[in-house]
Each structure stands twice: as C-alpha cells, then as structure tokens.
Image 1 (cartoon, rainbow, N blue to C red):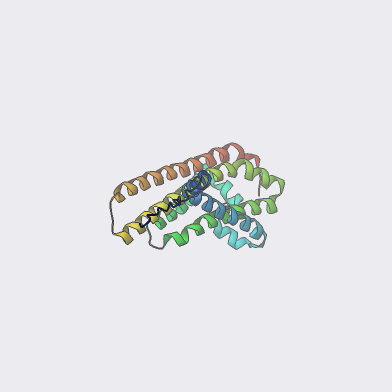
Image 2 (cartoon, one colour):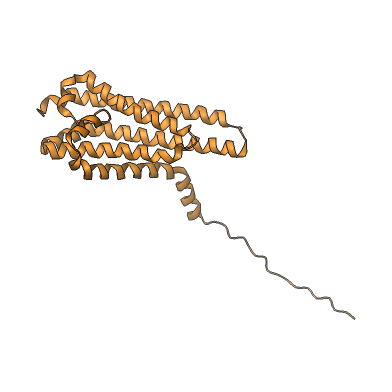
Length: 220
C-alpha cells in the first residue's frame, strides 16, 4: 500500500508597516515641503547675516527695492511709500513662486525664492545691527519683524502650493490623465489668493507700526 503524506507549511505573513512608520510617512508627505522651504529660508537668513558686513553701500541701495536697506530714504517717503515698498516687494516674491508652480522647470528654482527672501531678511537685520547698533535692533524687532514673520508664512505656504500643483501638472503630463486637474488648479488659485491676502496684511502691519513707532527713531 502506498502511503499518503501531508505536509503542513507555515504561511509567511507579509510584514505590515508599523504605526510609527505610517505616521512618519504621513508627516513627511504632509509637511515635508513646508519644512524644506522653511529650512531654505532660514539658511538664506543666516547667510545674509554673515555677508551683510561685506556688502557695499551701492549694493544696499539697489537691494532696497526688495529689502529694507535704506532707512533714511524709507522714513522720508512716509506711510504711503512704506506700504508701496513693502507690498511691492512681497508681491514680487509671491508672483515668482506662483509662476514657478506652472513652469516645467519650476521645482528647481522654488528653493531659490525662499533662500533669496531669507537672504534679504538677513541682510536687513545685519545692516541695521551693524549700522545703528541698539537702535537698529529695536527698530527691527518693533517695526519690521512682525510683517516679516507674517509674510514668511505666506511665502512658505505659496511655495508649498506651487510645488503641489507642479507635481500634479507633471503627473498629468506623464500619465496623460487630466482627471481632477481643474479642481486642483482651482484650489491652487484659492490658496494663492489667501497667500496674497496675508502679504497685504503684512504690508498693512508694516505701515501701522511704521506710523506709530518710526518717528521715535532718527537714522539721519
């Protein structure tokens, strides 16, 4: 008689990702771009502070279009001039971030926008501290810093939205799938409008603080 043998094999269970791994992936996917652009902005700020003493006066006057590096001129322009200078500078950075999100090579230049903004903030801080000492520090923290913080939040969020729409556009081109792209673009426009509103609020805060406290400082 022939024997029939049965062999029992243990089923190998597929390793499931732990809850901690899932949380890390979610955090990286959700906040990775925000942290990245924030870090590039901080690196630019540190670099600007270090190089602020090596920038000559002519370069500082040219940079005043984007940053606050010519206080006597700014103070003489009054509230309207302060608002136009602040909002004009903010609008340039937000517009650049917005257009880069719609460009095929935009992702490569997005970190440069946040780094250059941080560089300008560092230049302004270093210029005030080295040129005016304690008075410059008080001016920076009292008048400039609140608007800088609010606009930095707006810029980082705009760059994050630009990166997200860039990924969506690239995915649609590679997969030739346009499903849901219209809703994503509509969301992108809404987020960009919110960031522009924050930039406008930052400029208004600059003007209010400028009108209230700028008269206490004499930089001539």
